[in-house]
Length: 471
Image (cartoon, rainbow, N blue to C red; front, top):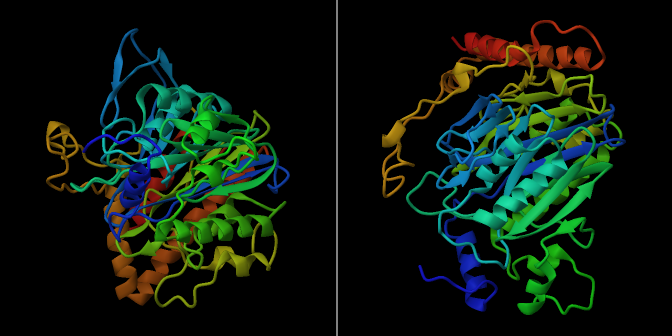
């Protein structure tokens, strides 16, 4: 495909076509953060739903800290980048065919989630770093959210972003926005090609949903951002510089209009919970189907979810809840009407009384960095080496089975729950009890109670118990 000058009319039209090449293109992802005093406890709380192709498997990968030889290079999904001397330990929730991650955290309490976005800057098909690669690289190389912003923008400037973000022979490409958090604050980073703007969040709640959302409140930006916008005729250079208004597509694709509705709904849910936001409340938001935040539409659904609690007190551990399985919703066929978090919030602040009594489909399991932390084999997908469709040329001409053991057991159990009511009730009770046990254990830890076991082995223990429940 012939290269197009950024910002030309043809380039903008190409971006619009790339954004709507398929009616089944992903149309959803949502990230949330609560910074005190919005949180019910002295902690930053981060959450994300990863909405991807329905049959895509998401694995949870633990990567220990590492030291690397000078001059070494690192293979990401499509390209190599220069490696750094030391990398931090990370826990990642990622589509199992790629190197990066949809969301994750590191040992220093930094959490990041990303979203697809389309802007006036054209999206090319050339292979570079995926937004998911940038996310993992930032987690491995940063000890704060602000440092992670610097890492991503530096890599973006050097290597660019691009390449297909879906395991399919038809390319699907986009640019990225990021929500980054640590124990003290959060940042929103939004990109358009190599250009970017960032907003610092030091209190309150914030969400992002597949659209540019930074207006005039810009805390940091690419040095050429405004000059480029003015040169393209998108900004007159005199009035207020509203990043979202200047760089958003003039004619939004249908799914980006839908993202606006999700963004507004997510913001409303956060506002209703102001001052009472907990991990369980964030899980409730991620489980909301009425707003589309928990997605199940056509060829796409919520394939994995994550909620993290990052205490202000450095003596308290950061806790990261991950599902490793799709669809965290609490209602299914035969379990009564679906109600949104909006309705439940009015029952009480932070932890609605009825929430923990309702059936669920995926279990949030706690992970804590510490002694004994290791890879849980039940949530690690098989590998295919040089024969992997992502490694052969041309890419993605064949399909392989990437289901990990927990995913396979979970999907079989869901089918059984639908067919056999009594057994389904028993399984759902086990799921509910397991998640509540994890939440209670974490509440105790954050209150200063002694840990029930070696903290690093907590996630593995919960994964094993969930796996056994499905046998």
